[in-house]
Length: 351
Image (cartoon, rainbow, N blue to C red; front, side):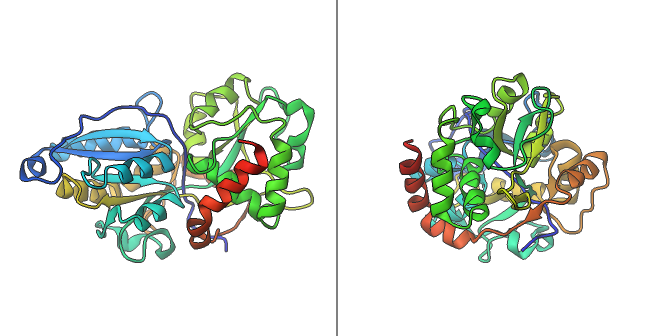
């Protein structure tokens, strides 16, 4: 079902290596003025001008707590936290669906309802208070506006020979936005069999795997690629410095363009070394002030229903998804069968 709330997400590449405490959850670690965040990419700016950049700076100024930041694909961040389960290094994890559900299923998240989470739509947070959306978003694709007179309208157009070695999408099962390609194709083609048959054909034009969705946008902007996947928030923010990026939503031949909500969802890590600091950061992320800046600075959409952005970015973003049909994935099915779907994708594409 279409949702009124726009959501966001997704993708990879290690941006910074934090100074991680080896102290686990002991008292010394708990007293440290630091909080470590593992996050999918998209919310940190290329030039220090993203939503994370602003709120982390404001949070540190207000609390004296320094944010140590690790960035990677949604799947990569969950896998890293899972490897560290017996000696957690992260305090907060932020990923796209279905990886936040996967983190919850692995017991990596503890219950905590941040202040303001009562204003988050029920579908955008865990029923057991283990996670909540902090930035809302939509899945999308990008194209080079300089090289192409208009965006390709359909999935089928991408099979044309002119896209050979000029098309790339991030890897399902590793990147949140890459997994979203598979989810959208399964919806648009009416099931996994037809979707995988199509993606098998598309492989003839695909450059190859990419662990990072965020790294595809510069290639599209330069014309190295004509088409890639992404998400509305990340690509809209990138377009400030990459003027050739256009955002679009492929349709199946004869159908309507479609998308689905893909939020950045945050949770407090089980046995986090700095649990109280993590709680403070989650509260800050969902504060009205930080949420008011989501569109203005981050190019995304507030997770709070009581925050109504009217800035120029909010108006432009609403225009981007105007006329696009929004569907709601069955996240329970996807979480349960993700490994099966990804394995089938690997077989179909030879990846």
